Amino acid sequence: MKERSETAVETEKQADRAGVDENRIFTIPNLMSLFRLLLIPVIVWLYVKEKKYLVVAGLLVLSGLTDVTDGFIARHFNQISNLGKILDPVADKFTEGIMMILLAFRYPAMWFAIGAFALGALLMSLWGLKAMWADKGVNSARWHGKATTVVLYIIIAVLLVSTSISEKTANILILTATAVALANMTAYGLFYRKLLKNTAVQEEKQAD
Image 1 (cartoon, rainbow, N blue to C red):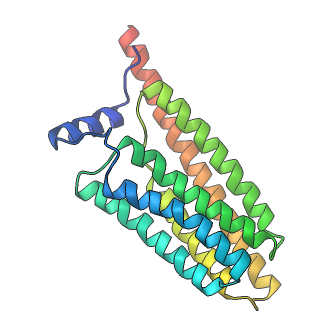
Image 2 (image 1 turned 30 degrees about the vertical axis):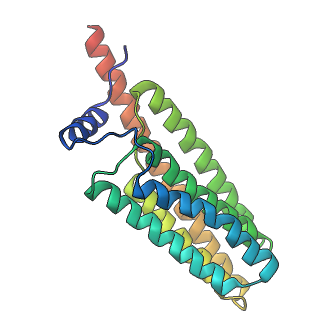
């Protein structure tokens, strides 16, 4: 049997000491993540049909606030769950991806950011699945992932409300979003590399 990583074991011990069942489904953070997913079709409708860009920006800010607060609630009120570890980044990625695609029809340079975003999402998903297989656990989002979400939400909101923004300024913002997405992908790559390396070392020690 493959041994869990030290990080996963420690998280499990902390959860046990706090009496936390990480297999829970109905938690406040999970409901907040579900709320963000349900906001997506509303945002798309308001953007495409109603052209209410300011309202869309407001909903995007609301979505971002729930993203920040659900993590705080999960950690400080012992509501961390395996479903939440999956649902939270899924809600983020879908929201960011949909908004970037919508803006790409107004700012063609956004397609480059979408490419970096898609590559990062794909690689992080593969790394996460590999870590789950090796470690038998679900890893929470890292701080740089949350920071990336905040930066992307801010850039998207600015592009939404500033309909008269110059092409040069828009391209600078889009380039920033691309750089942030690539930096986040690199940071996750280093994290999973270390995690999988530690797991391999533990397996070798156990085999000896």
